[in-house]
Image 1 (tube, rainbow, N blue to C red):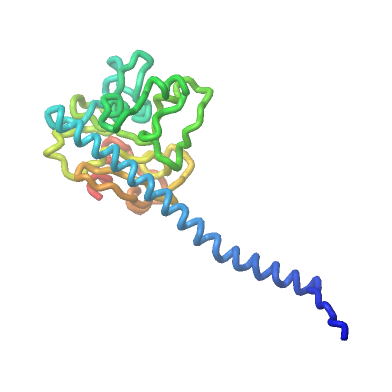
Image 2 (image 1 turned 45 degrees about the vertical axis):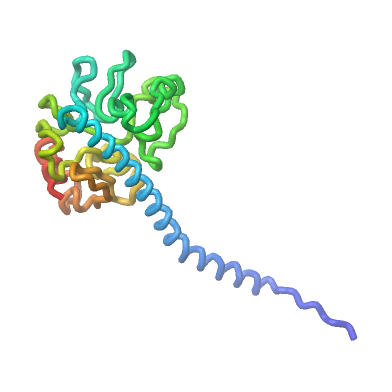
Length: 230
């Protein structure tokens, strides 16, 4: 006896495709959320490395974290800009140049026109050669406090490290939460902060903006005292 082969009909195939599409639509948001969470966890881990290096640096310099203020006698207007062509460094770039973050070859980064990976969020600032010759000195982990001078990006002057409590020392530039510069949000409406008590974590935009719908702050006199208190 001949056995009759049964093939799927077009309608049956369309039904299967529709079911797969529905399942994919249900699963993708969960997968994207898990991916975002993993990326943020990676950023938290790396920003904590930078914070630990700040702490060790301060131990070696009379309890004072590095200067933000002086780059060849000038006050930078952006805490992500932290090096000069003549080799004067500030903030985290200064910490890296003194090997508190392991062996960081800043000259090689300058030649390649990329800033050191350890000073950048692993998500929001992929390390690719850029045509801008300043790319090597621009980082995404912002340190805008200063223990030596008034007039840092975030005032007032910091106290010596042993007297600090929960002041924000570093924040990730990867979300529109702290400064609202219109950057792409890679942390899902949150930002990653490192505080003087050694904690590193994710803080929501709602918490940082104190529930307001639009950026409400003068960052020096209002924003940072509020974020320090979180």
